Each structure stands twice: as C-alpha cells, then as structure tokens.
Image 1: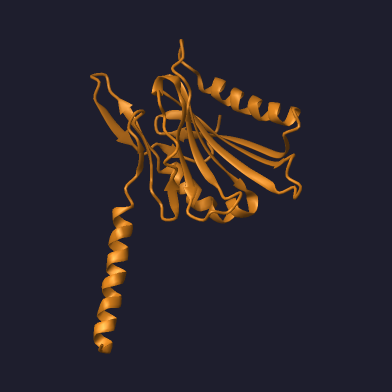
Image 2: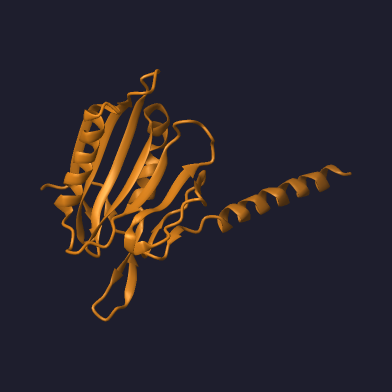
Length: 207
C-alpha cells in the first residue's frame, strides 16, 4: 500500500472526525421551557435527567464532562414549580443563600468563601453567586467551587449551577462561563410569539 494512499486515508479520517464533531455541536435544548445551552467539545448531556412535568419544576438538564473523574464539574439547570404568585429575584437569591447556610448549619459543608454580584440576563436582572466550601464527609478536605446564575423566567426562578472540585473546576472556568453566558431563553411576546435571546452578561453590575 503506497505512502500517498495512506496519507490520503489519514486526511479523510481527520475530515470525517471534524464533520462528526460539527454534527454534534448542536445546542443542548429543553424545549419544554424554551431553554438551551451551547454544546462545547468535551461536554455531554446526562440522558438520565428528564423533566417529567415542567409545571412541577425540578432538574431540567445536567451537563457533565466526558472524563469520568470524581469531582469533575457538572452544570445543572433547575426550574422552580409554577408559583401561585410570581416569584421575585430577591426571593430566589435569598433561598439560594439560605439553603447553603442550612447545609453548613447541619454540618454537611464548611463554607470558606462567598461572593455574589448582580448580572444582566438579557432584559432581566440576575445574580451570580459563588461559594467555596469543603464537604464535611470528605477526608481529603478538598475545596469545592459552586457558581450559580439566578434569574426569573415567566414568574418562576431559574438556577444554572456549576459545581466541581476546585482543582478540576479552575481549568474549566472559562468554558463554564462560556456555556452559562451562551444560554438561550425563549421570550414570549404579547401575541404569544416567541424568540430566542442570548441573555447572560456575567459582568458584575451595580445594584
């Protein structure tokens, strides 16, 4: 088999791989709530996560890394149940902070640092909340980084949270920000029509 033939086969293989990667680059979508996240190389959607009843809320989707390493970052999208009365952003923020404080009070985690900043989610206000903590049951006392983008969509809270061991999270921090900042949210117009907007600006904003 000639050298040129082998080189041609190698080139064809590279092109085929690139085409396959391009075909797999379509966004991760949750049409039931009009939401999607960009598909970056190395990230997979967990097929076991399915939202059975959007009205009841819950875990909409989970993205994980291809590498099966304990503590590798994952990204969860959680939507609140349809409330009796519209939810306010401050309620979503207060609950998120309270839940983490409750975990610490029960001794499940030991919070080392907390940071919160206002952000813009398209036309909406939002918050970015970052916790650094240690899981009490972890004998290695490894630090965990957890960053959440909080906002309100159609009167109910949305939380997009990335969590992972700090030493694994940090090298992927830019990718995680790219995924969160590239999410699309359907906007319902006055006539019931909807469009998609890339809404997230993670730049801190003044209160």
